[in-house]
Image (cartoon, rainbow, N blue to C red):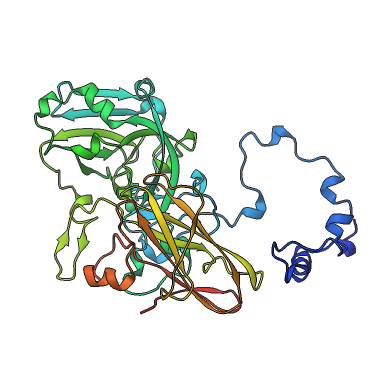
Length: 423
Ligand code: MTE
Ligand code: CO
């Protein structure tokens, strides 16, 4: 086809939008001659790419905007830094590893499986060292869990700041992990030496320079913690802790130690850097609250949002978002289009998994009037996601971590969305 007759993508979109006006489904009328229907296209006139060219598939170039991004001023160096999941552009609930946020305190390290060792020591009957091959011989489990950095939404305490859901809420990912329950490894080492397990702890640390050590109460360690070596069916990517990481369902991301090398059973918390000077919550009176492990229920509308404006004008509009709770299942999500004055129940994509992302939708007929969009999550404990005002009343504005308040997007008549606050 010559260049003159090739319809541009833009013209096609304009044409179909015009034809769609008034129709429910938003499909173009078949009466309009559309060259993309009537003409033989380039891609049908040649043979495509052979299978030998894609031994491992990557996203098509037209999706190259769906990538991790960072906020330059946020951290001093890219080695000790963070990037954000493009949650505005993803759908469903599973985060592909290739665009799942990364948080490193001393950079991602490259370790071979053969060089991997995991030691269990401290108050155990027999201290043990596991190789990667040893871990593969324990009965394993698969579970989908979200991992949220405690600092997610942490820049929004004092005011609406970052204009994109990727930046305000993108320190989260949700994958299907394959691993061995930590319980099984602790039992292999034997917990008899620890005596009464009620007030015992495990201290977990990574093999990277930061070591990223955290204390976990024994009750949690024996509950649902996984020593994981696969995510979404494949080996962990280097940036997520290859070959082995800890998965601590529902608890703050910092405890999900990557490149995990040691688990020590002890009778007291270690009070490491990551649980004293960092990952504590500074309250209004200046005192620091520690042990805020669980990520409370939270939700956010991913589209429309500042990076996902409404481009089709008024009519059918799919409002799409994510909800999650470290306490278990999401049972309900409400959406408001008027800044929290009235609420409508959203439709859950499917019954929520425990401690995993749940997709929700509100399918509306948009009249083109500006909206103040909000989502509010509720979990199986009956907990309801707080407003920003309620959270500030309880916690002040000194905090960085554990901001789970209701987010507001102002959507104007042109469909452009902006990060705002309502009071
Ligand atoms: N583990 C090690 N060994 N080193 C680290 O820097 N960062 C922690 C945690 N585990 C970290 C680590 C933090 S703060 C978070 S939020 C999660 O890993 C992030 O996991 P991800 O990089 O797979 O997204
Ligand atoms: Co973190």
